[in-house]
Figure (cartoon, rainbow, N blue to C red):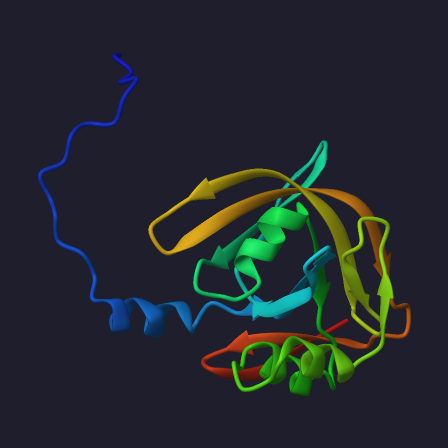
Length: 175
């Protein structure tokens, strides 16, 4: 038996249409998070579903950040972020943090926050908040893949349901 060390070169160049891809991805339930950062340039944040665990040794998360989001450069310059997982009843925060019609000050005024150890804002009432330091950034044409080491975790014992995005609408993940 022979094992190949490198993937064979493919001549296949067809790609799935972007709209078809997005429609397919809408069927992948995803937790809704607010990614926040704080530092010399102030508070910044946006709504994200592209977040996942990488490892528990050390605790590490992966966060995909669109280069066009106003928070992108601030996350990279502050070198910290918080991943705040939204709870039932926080749909208004999801909408506000994903809309350009709200200033950052208006977005943050919609909820209560506490300053984390890195300076990243932690959402009071979130299902869970992960406070992280940026450890590596991988650039792609449209997004930066941020690998972040978790320094602090806090959760709300009273949260009954997490907010999920599924087929282009809100759903709940219940315990």
